[in-house]
Image 1 (cartoon, helix red, strand yellow):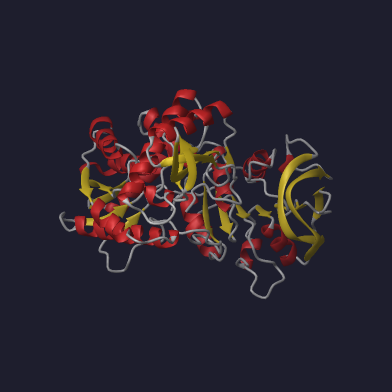
Image 2 (tube, rainbow, N blue to C red):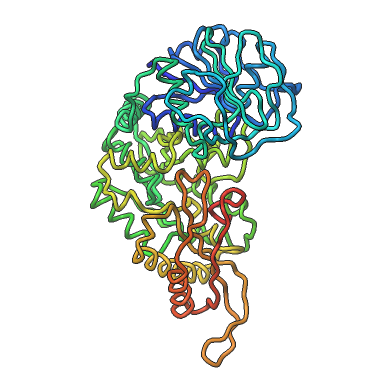
Length: 512
């Protein structure tokens, strides 16, 4: 087994993958394992350091999550974050209790002692807090190295054992010096080299794909979006003609998307693409369905069924590949640790037992911007890589209520106009995601001298770094007015346009 410089033990925090991502940005390779991973398995990875993530539990609860005790005595440097800090304090005999005042959001942290963990960082900087419990009494051998208004022990250390712990979350972007703190742990305390990059990831994944597939064919689910395109390019790089990329026209695609996808693969990427028209199947099964979770499940089940049927046309098919990303995973299922489900995704959660092939998800640990960097590394044209994200369930989750051909037509027409105006303004490349939602809410309007009673479209445009959090785009009113005027004038059946000014959280980016 190859060396893994940093191993992250996941206690279920929604931020766990951000720790790995920040480490990768600092060019340090790391892997996430469940909190209850055995010491033997961790030792086999030959790590130079360990990180204990945050999590939703309390260390003093009866069913508190704990690690193998021998890990503490391994001699490896350890960094505990939030719950990880409380776990360290509790294990070594300190006292953890519920704080009188919970601490959520930005907080100024003051360094009480000089420490390698804070090397070249600014004192009294802003860090992100998210905790209800705190360390009240330090364990023997530990000192307090930082404090905040609500936490006397915002950071603690046992220098001799090389164990450090932080009450705040250095991995989130709100922690101004957070990336440096993580880099200091990896480089200054663990002695890791900062040499890992997306080129390294591509080589590792290609080698891994070859070792797993061993000359057998792989079906790749292609949607035409960035994720599946990069996954297909990566697979093609590794296994060549053993890749069978399948594009399913669900009938839920954007305007002219089928033609664009076919051209992108066959002309730009030089990858033979198999197109399956399953639009009538999807639309018939979605007839009368209103509940968004039911829509997603129908689309997911149909997706599996279509691929299962297509797979029977080929010999020696052993694997199915998908472009699943980490934000999809953590919103759907608990992957490494005990995290909470937000909503299900059509391509997350494994395959039914009856299926004859194994799932491969080479991008499962990556965020969108990392996937784009990987795509550029693989030689995919920039204009293809920088396309805004499009959900697997397609326009079905952008129509409130039942999905019909008539509503799909309205939505596509409105979306084309919005995208045209956004690109012409230069804001397309400045924003993360943009789309229209058909609300299926009718209202009275006046067009000419006539009364109308037509549909409402909502425009949703957000700014984000990774899709985990997002803010609505503060666009010029003149641009929004042009979008609204054109949609109402050019799309028969729509007489009102609204703009979504909700952030994530508390809202999600997609409406359903």
